[in-house]
Length: 190
Image (cartoon, rainbow, N blue to C red; front, side, top):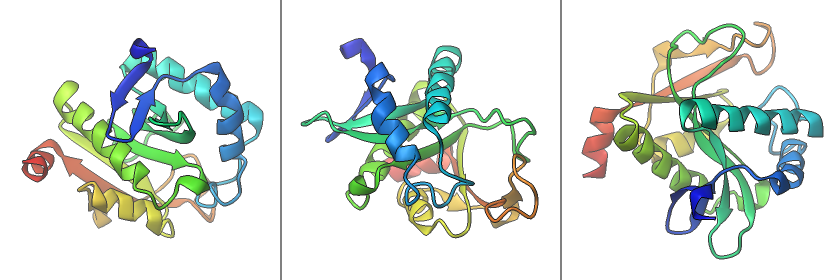
């Protein structure tokens, strides 16, 4: 099991994907409340494909959007991690590494996203030596923006963009961009 764990925090394990994650992950991605800031909910097949892509990225990049679970109970909460975007059309600020999260509704408001994200920031800056990590979401997703701010990221209003995977007039096409440089992060953790 130890080789299955990427990172550990006070309350959480951030670990590799397992086959038994599909059911809870598919339920999370099919939940309209969880997915309200995304283009749509995801089918079980799309959730399975996303897990497969995450596993591939772990192999190729050495990191991915990874499952998180409560250390004491083993409860699956969702995913948090780092990702090199690979959309059909590039983001305007690529190349980049983004940080992101998707947690089930019952886990909201407990600080899990921030706790896990801080562990991934440390990994990104200290272990793999990134100079910057970005995050983005739609303007209405204030809960995620609050997490971005809690973990030390700053809004780059000039970097806001239309997501290249969506039509320009799509309701969730406009995205806000947050950034965190290694230099700023170092001043925050000392």
